[in-house]
Image 1 (tube, rainbow, N blue to C red):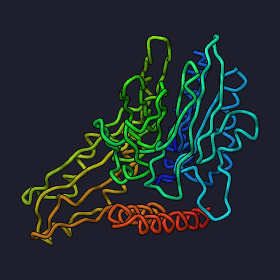
Image 2: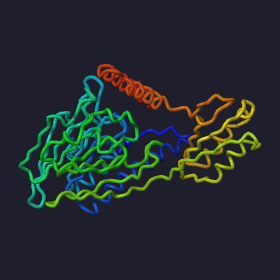
Image 3: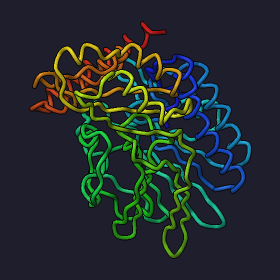
Image 4: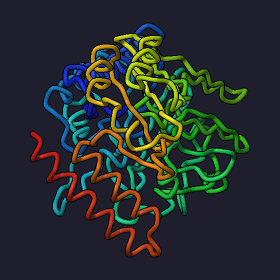
Length: 377
């Protein structure tokens, strides 16, 4: 879900509103569940976007989960890579407050844990493990077994399914806690998966694999995603899965080729932006073409950004398709320190040649993110 995610928007007020979009969608899932009264409500990790979420977001989660608990709906959660502590000596996640308050079962260990339930005379065992932080290339399902005596077995995992035509929005995610369909323990009827932000379902023998994905589009890599949550019915005939759509803030991506003979290029770009003006829309514009230095220098990017700040909910201007006298340029928006640091380290991790180097870089990333988040508070 990535509650309490930080956004680096042109308008700081909209950064907060974007966080509220995520809250709204989670609250709508809770509301749907209160109406339909499922037996189980499963959250397969990355419940918060950061390991030390704001008090406001903690209270929001507890309030929503309390509604489920008071309605008799059993909530089970595991920790994802965004939830699990990495600092030396840290043993608890923010979501552990749910179990501490008696509102949910949190399978917080990296070792497999199980919780047995009984619904309508049928035994259901929910097993799972939280994200493996010590060696992120470790297979979280290798060697795992489940109780085959139960009528239904559910396993929860936060990791990266390999094969079956599944690909994450962000390539480096595929190396984190990787597993294959054949690693799924015998006897599992339903694999509740988290980590990838895109939603999908796959079948492997009698087991249905379902990854609901994030509850809102978190960045432009998810532009083509349709956000939803999974509604699952385990029955004697198998497993029926429906994806219930979630509301998404509108996003539009456009490109504009700049012609040297077009006159006032700033005016040309503004007129293009005006055609899509919508203060509730996330808009991305890619500039293309070849200009000389004089023409490029007359482009008033400050004026364009000021216009876009009012015209759209947020605006991204992409200039790497533009060349100036034969030289390609890239001059995007300055990232937040946290995002720029994480992006740089993730790139190094993706190129690392050994497990030892990869683990070291992950430790550097996590330690750095903690310091940057604390500095921003």
